[in-house]
Length: 211
View 1 (cartoon, rainbow, N blue to C red):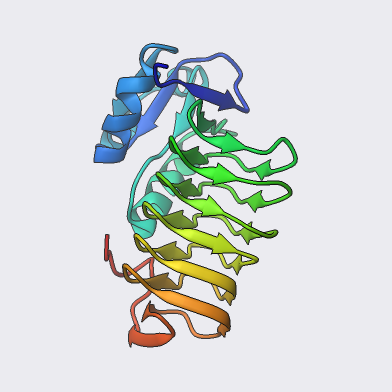
View 2: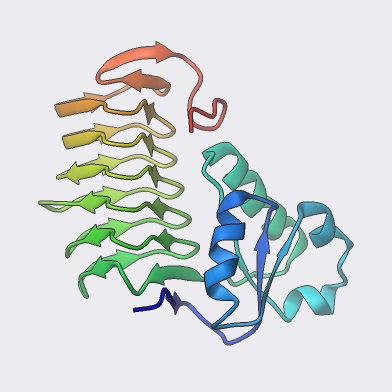
């Protein structure tokens, strides 16, 4: 089976992938076989005329939450009422009761059972399981590969490193967890960078790229 994306919130216009990132490059090589699309920088975006911008849809792919928010904010600043598509791999499993926001990427081999909620501009990476149990992810959450979430409520911009397991965890916005973190039955009440439940750095996912 070849890789394809199911495009949510699609209005059939060409798609600008905003940001010269490795994520957008990877997405482009699959998406270009389905839809007219182009990778453009923030500078390219700012140079285009109003009609051209209105004739496109938008997606921003990045592994660093701070950069992704900057890219999205740039689109919002330059485009009147931009339409952000979500891209869900045909090799992922997403339950029909799951709620997927705008600007979301769901990678191949991810599993999202119902009735989970995935907020706007989230990235659900390879081999991530958002279950067992109902979980909600705020906007801009990012899971690295091989993450397992169960009964979690993650605040906006929560970043979870590879091979981490979060079970019955609640976070405040912009927390992030190093690779192989294990957190169970715990509320994270201070934003910052964690290894398991230990706060390692005060800088959070908007300020520090631990990818």
